[in-house]
Image (cartoon, rainbow over all chains, first blue to last red; front, side):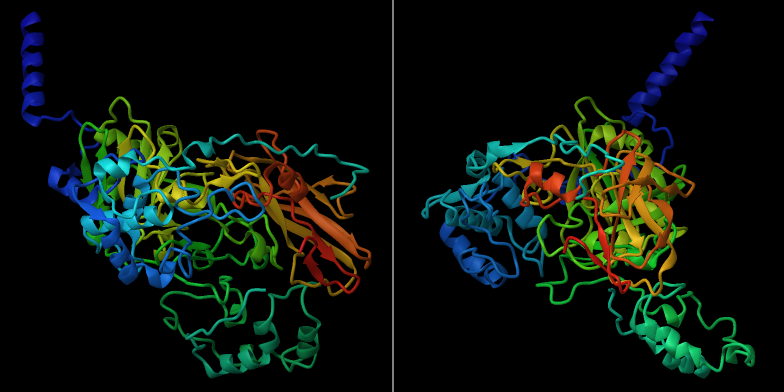
Length: 188
Length: 429
């Protein structure tokens, strides 16, 4: 009996070491290779995690922006078919809030993440990482968050503190209460 | 109203074309039935040779043969019932189209009329070349083909989907039920429980979020809390019995029942298990709610209880005083609808409506109230109460707390004004 248990355990141990992974409940799908994951995982965290190597300057970003972005967003990010990208700081609590990268976005690395995955709208994922850093640098410069002679890379982009970072709060709903009056109510 | 659009599909038979011409009054306007609709129709049809005592033309000759429509489409007389797509939008790649709620019955939205919201157009994806990758904080990162996904145990559920901005808090609010809350639809979805797929890879300690990514040109990403992923979230490949429509994420989409529409990521290609949310553009810059003091609420996932009367509703007309059934839909991201109250006197008195069974969790629920209209001006409205006891608020109650910069998650009671001539309009336009 005891021998049998030992034998069974060694078989289990052998299976575990040879397969490298635990058994899946259904055994459906195949293992994704590191190269496959690296090619598809373009997620950049709010903290800048997974930002790729490379760098780009504000001045180069101005050129790329003029060619790739200005048609929709305006030469200085003033907006058009595409969102306004610059200005608006100090307007969020007013009747006409202007939500831009500089006035509203809580995390600077999100800029890199979004431009790389979705912009320009007619040809997403066509810019080099260096160009994405450069365009991000130019947009941050338009918002007064990066000096004109700067160059942006993973480290410097992650270090930028956005002005609106601390003004996001969690979901506090239900926040509105209807007393559910049934008769002789005041109406709307 | 929904606007008629060019339809390339002409009716097969000549006789049908003739009916089309004769039915022109119908095609130009709303679906007409009973005492609800336009007066022109009755005038046009009163003289028809197809009315009693004559034998209708469509009984005197055989109809269209089998095979005329390999994939069936609605009657040509229903041509005006189409998606409500705004004209003169700045662009149509990141845009939305609405369900014509006022023209539909029951709780299921036909697939061709399901609302649409895309952030970079609708991709055409070959399912044989589509892959779902599962990476991040898992024991075993995996890649699935569509065949793989369909091998998992399947399940079907009826759930609503609603865009978070439906409608905005600022005027103009629109004229019809579709203009107001047409970014809302409901279908039976078939797919696999997300929990099963995650278990296949094995979640590691510290797995708190799953970042879902679409295979569209926006590579749309949203972070979903792990609790939701292990609860009722599913990966859907079918909608009302057939494969997903391209506009709904063919060949695979995420469904997070009760959560705002954009989190139900379409054309799903990747699930990234993480410790922190991605803070993607679509969950910070967009789909966050700005409060009057300048603070913004983030991760406002749930769609709260809501209802609207769809019949009679804006753009329709009561042709005669007397009996009219009030009918509408109610829904809640927090579960089942418990009851719906209806007022026909501008909110002074309310009465409980009948709920059509089945009343399902996070699905549309149809409600009805028999009503005798006395021919005098009236304001009618509905309010939903869900199983948590939450009561749908008025627009004034919402604005008092949130202000009109809030933009998303407007679940206000919406009153319709019925004029003495029967014309129904938005009472808060």
